[in-house]
Image 1 (cartoon, one colour):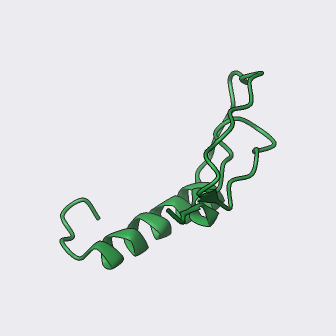
Image 2 (cartoon, rainbow, N blue to C red):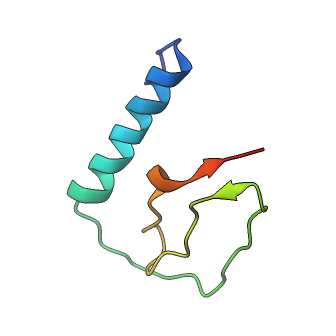
Amino acid sequence: AHREQDESKRNALYTQADQLEFNDAPIIYLFFYKDVYAVQPWIKGFTVPAVFNGQRWTDVTISK
C-alpha cells in the first residue's frame, strides 16, 4: 500500500491490512491506558475501543 500511487487503491489496501490485523493477528495486551481521548466533530465513526489498540480504524472517516 505504501507504494500505491492511486489514493483510493491505497486506502483500500490499508483498510484491508487493518481488517486482517484486527481479525487475525494474535495480540496479547500487556497494559491498558486509562485515558479516553476526544476527537474533532469532523471525525466520524470513531468509537472508544473496549481494549487499548482494539480500535477499528476501518470505520473512521473524515468529513471536513
